[in-house]
Structure formats: C-alpha cells, structure tokens
Length: 326
Image (tube, rainbow, N blue to C red; front, side):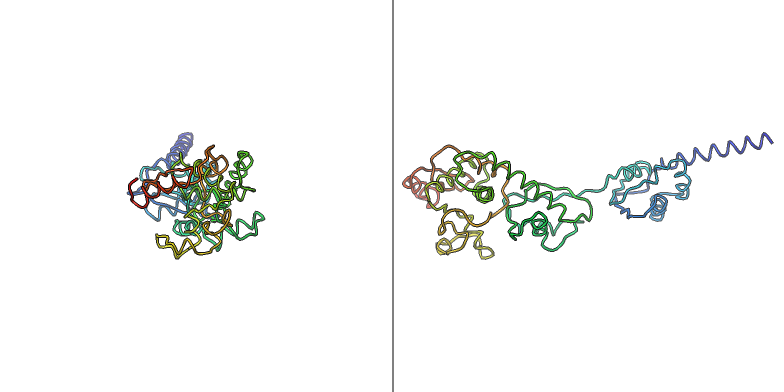
C-alpha cells in the first residue's frame, strides 16, 4: 500500500509539473496575427480558440492550470497580437497586462478640419461618429459650431474600436491648454484682443511659412499691420475663403472678391482660424519679432524677403515673382 501511495504521489507530482510546463510551448505561427478578446471570454475559451486555429495543442490543460495559477483568469479585453516567437506564456502575460494593439493617427499642423476628417475616416479600427468635432465642442460648452483651429495637431495613439470623440477630446484639451499658456505669456505689444484672435493669427502664420526662423518675422509683419490699421493681405486667407473653388491658383478676380476671409478686402483678422496652428505658430503669434517689417514676399524656395517699405517690397516682388532683374 505504501508503494501504491508513492506511485500515486509521484504521478500527481509529474502531472502538476506537466501542467506548469504547459505554457512554455511555442506557438505554431508562421506570421504575426491578431486576436480579439471580448468581454466575458475566459482564459479557457481563449486557449481553446487558439487550439481550434492550430496555434496550440492540449487546451484542456489550461482548465487545471488555472487552479494552480489563478492569476491566469484575469485576462483583459482588447485586440492583441500573437508573434511567431511567442510561447503561450509570453502571449498570456501580454493579455494579463493589457498590452493591446495600439494604432496611431497624426493630425497634421496647417491642415483644416475637413482635411483632418478625411484622415480620420481612413484610419483602421477607429470608431467614427457623425460630426465628432462639434460633439467635442458642445461637451466643453462651446456652441459656436466653429471647430477650425481649436484642436491640437499631434500624433495620437488609440486602441482598437476607440471612439473618435475620445481621441479628439484629447486634442481639444491640449489646444486649449497651449492657447491659454500662449495668451497669458504674450508680449505686451501683441495687437490681437483675445486668445481666440491669437489662435486665428497663429493659423495664418502656420500657413504662410514652414521655416521656424521666419515665424516670428511673419508674426511681426501682421502685428505691425494691425497696429497701423493696414489690411493683412495674406493669400492663405483668400484660399480658405474660396473653399472648393480653389484650383491651385489665385487670380486678380479672387483677390477682389468680397468674402469674410479675404484679407485684401476686409480689415483686421478673418472670423475664424484657417487651419490648425502648431505650437511654434502659437508661440510666434504671442511673441512677434522686434522688427518694423510691413511686407514679405516668397523667394519660391520656402523662404521670404522681408521689407520695411513698399518701394523695397515692390523691388523684391519684381525680382522673385515677376522674374525681373533689379
């Protein structure tokens, strides 16, 4: 009888050791795949599902292994990746720690809400809803119906099937924080009268140049013009006001058209931002360079010539835009 008890004890020991070793098996995968763990799925059902897909064997063992390792029952829902190099143990540890697959979308500075909307609609596994930008505004007490420029351009990470409103809420909060900081720290000479006007100005600066060194200079030109009561006369506002009609060129007729955004025809700023300003553009709007430039013209290489007088400006226009020699 003692011999039988010994054999039984030995059998139990080896059975337990076999169960403990079960998660160490490699997974039968040739390429990375994904699996969704839905609410209510147990680790037993998960491993059984893997066996049905030919990824593991002997899934019945997991039911008993959980009794030895009860923490295995605490799997988390979400979308997970399984790699060919995984063991069942490494995969389960990822599931236990909730290391779900994440996706990324970049809301690019200088783009409009319409362009961002198209980008969001092309993203994988992002749950879309109708008018998400307006939904976020209303949730934060903004009933203006004017979302342009109020969301921060950045790369955002999200989980599978996350609501786009959650992502945009992060963007909105970031922009409000950045804008408030820029407004509170603005230079004394800044001519705009509110944080929203600073946002509008920053959006124009964003569209006028991509060169970091030029942003404070562009800001200074607009700030000086506002101080003197001169019209801003900036092409990006005209383009924004043209909407779908813009085909890549601005004609003299376009410059003479009376729209709310045509700063060749209106005094001061347009009624809303024309794009999403970057942090650098916000900083430039709040801290214009200490120069007395009133004009600038493109060199057609991404940089600009800045002038104090109309005479110098016209000479620069002749040289770089009309292709005339000095």
